[in-house]
Length: 159
Image (cartoon, rainbow, N blue to C red; front, side, top):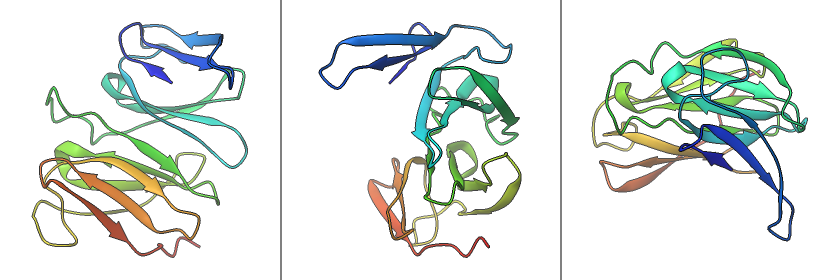
C-alpha cells in the first residue's frame, strides 16, 4: 500500500497486521515523493509510480531498491495528475500519463516500447487517464477519470 502522506510503502500481513515499510520523502534512489501507483510484477518485484520525482522505481519484495527510470511525461504540473501503473504476466509495465492523455508501455528494465491514447472522448482516446490494469488475457483496462468511463483495449503485440 502506498502512503502518500508519509511517502513510504507499507506492507501488511494477510490478517492486516503491519509488517514493515520502506521509502521516505526525498529524491535519492529508494526515496519517494507522492507514491501513488504500485504493482507487483511476475518476478515479485514491486513497481512504484513515484509521482513528483517523475520516475518509476523498482524494489525487491523486501523493499530494497533495484532500479528506476524517468517518466518525462509527468510534467504537466496538474495537482490531480496522479499516475498509476500495472505489470502484465510478461513483465511489461503500463504507466498512465494523465496530463498527456496516454498510456506508456515499458519493458521490465524501463526501456520504452510504445504509447497509446490522445485527448478525446472516442473509444481510443482519453480525457484524463488514471488507473490501469491488465487482465490475465492481456486486455488493458484504463479508467478515464474526466471521461467518466473505463476503456478496454485488446492485448498489445509487444514481442
